[in-house]
Amino acid sequence: MHGALLLALLVGLPTVTGAVLLIARPTRGATAAGVATAALTLAIAVAAAVTRPASEVALLAGVRAGFAVDGLSAVLLVLVAAVLLAALVVAAAEPELRTGRFHGLMLIFAGAMLATVTATTLPVLLMAWEVMGAMSWALIGYWLDDRAGTRAGTVAFLTTRAADLGLYVAAGAVLAGGAGTMALAELPGLDGGWLHVAVAGVVLAALGKSAQLPFSFWLSGAMQGPSPTSALLHSATMVAAGGYLLLRTAPALEATGWAAPLVAWVGVATALVLGLVAAVQDDLKQLLAASTCSQIGFIVLAAGTAATQAGALQTVAHAAVKSLLFLVAGLWLATLGSRSLTGGLRGAARRHRVVGAAFTVGALALAGLPPFGLWVGKDAVLAATPSISPVLYVAGLVAGWTAAFYAGRALWLVWRPAAGPVTGTGPTRLPRPAVATTVVLAIAAAAAGLLALGPAPLRPQPAPQGWELAVSAVLAAIGVLVARRYAERAPAPGLLVRWIELEELAQRGLARPVLVLAGALARIDDHGLARVPAGAARATARLATLVTAHG
Image 1 (cartoon, rainbow, N blue to C red):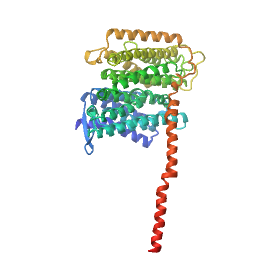
Image 2: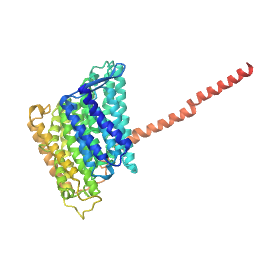
Image 3: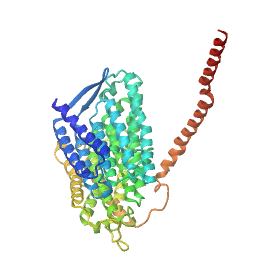
Image 4: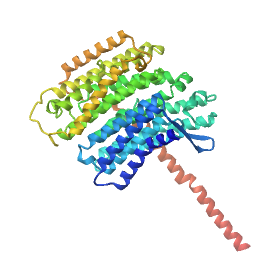
């Protein structure tokens, strides 16, 4: 009973409080209520991570709704709750976000993510997955008078929603394959070809949610939303959910014989291609978005090579780093009114030195330099790749070098003196709670790597060799130094700046053909099929009239 209550509080507290704030829309106290709820949720998450509760309740005949906390989900629970708290504290610096609507949406989203992390059965996962998608649409398009933002929210929702259909296919395959309880742990034991169908559905849904190729474009548009939203959704929750699901179902991926290698290749391809996209971005949030796709690619690669511990470390390290960088970007946007690295953000770290120092820690960690977590996490993931192909290892090293380049480039630019007079649209002083939050996240980003190099129980498996860590560190240092030389060069317009036209390709290859087909089927329905029952009704009426007349 204690475990069931703890799990109910973990998911229910942010969800119910968020619903109340969203419906009531209080003009005062929303920030305090949101932050207090996030703090309590973090405390509950820590308790759940320590006690590892599990609970099941009847949902349908023979189907259970299951929740549980194990080693993998315990880490994610604390991570999600901590990033939620940090995002809401920093959001208080922006007057437009001190609303019941914003805090309600953020809390409901977090509740759905916590349900996703603890779900042990497909029905629970499906419900939480759907709520996450709906809340992400509302948060990305938070400013209703911003047409670009509302369109971006719609694109993100429709793209991930299309991929989410894979989970419904997986659920049907699980039932058809004889796993009546619909537990995720039963996937590897499905009968016959149903295993392949179920795993294909899971892979599709996970790749879409984690913005992997070819779905990456939706994350670019999602940068229209508030920066605290990006810090939560695009570091520790929504995009991480896809990678987490693949890590959770790694035994099933391996059981198919084809899914694990496919996932590994998609992950490393995304890490490499989106790393190149990030390297040419002038907009800081676009750089961070492309970087997110790239870094999540390493988590997907870990799932494909069954390196679950390494994938978990990469997830934690990336979330700490990326939430920090997104929140700093939001603070600079609020005070300086710019997202351009070669424009208004040049010299931003000099004007806000504490936040600039925190950004420096985050950028160095993102670059993969020692002793930070992404250095160890990336190499732990790559240590498992020779089981599939040495090409994966080489491609991963190149993707890691690219990360060092784009992180170094951003770092050099925010510390270089501004080219002209400093202008801004917001306050010159940043709120102390927001600044303190960035410092705490910077410490967390540094601690992740130190823990991974600490006692043996904390080290990821397979553990990278010393020479692998050394090669990676040298490549990262070279990448940062090379970035210094090329930092000033503004990116020329091109395919990489435009995210290799992924959205346009999706429009031409999928959306427009589907709309054309839908229009054709609608015409057939309106002018063909719809006339059949209407004609039958008229004939029946005439027959009834004749019978009555001659009866």
